[in-house]
Amino acid sequence: MDSSNLKCLISREEIESTVKRLAADIRKDYHDKNPLAVGVLKGSFVFLADLVRTLDFHHEVEFVRLSSYGSGTTSTGQITMIHDLHVSIEGRHVLVVEDIVDTGNSIAFLINYLSEKQPASLKLCALMDKPSRRQVEVQIDYRGFIVPNVFLVGYGLDYDEKYRNLPDICTLQEVGEEE
Ligand code: PRP
Image (tube, rainbow, N blue to C red):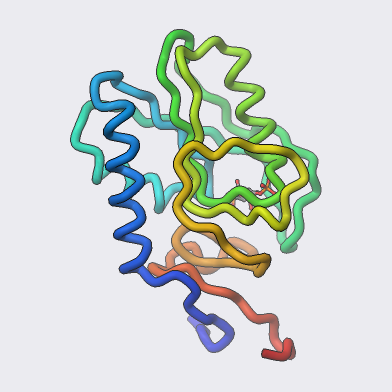
């Protein structure tokens, strides 16, 4: 894999300690609630896997998948559900787990969608927040990092389905782009 255009922005060590901090905050609120963690595919799969292995209390895991950006680097703003939940969330304590909130369109759509299903509570944990790109207001209850307006790959995030496997979060410079 050619990594010449990659620059580490957030190291695996920083990610690890932030995941532990988030898990400790989540533990305080959910340790006796058997919450349902809902991962948003595909980007959140690495973060969710690390997060749940740091939670030392009973919880369940489900996934949804929303429409993708496609092969480019900008959002279309048109969100649809590709893979829905297959369990009822009525009366459940639901914690949505996202890798990144960018424009906020994806998560606003999902929070609105899930809130109509009468969960007992509904909160959001996002590893990264890119507030400079926000188009709709989103409440992030557990936030890992605030990140600048640069295109990020690694730790679940892709460019054209590549780089999700990188253990660090990196910026990707297009070929020919100046430093
Ligand atoms: C990314 C990311 C979030 C969303 C954030 O997913 O994982 O779900 O975009 O962007 P927004 O705040 O502007 O809506 P993407 O659509 O790229 O799909 P993927 O998770 O399958 O990579």
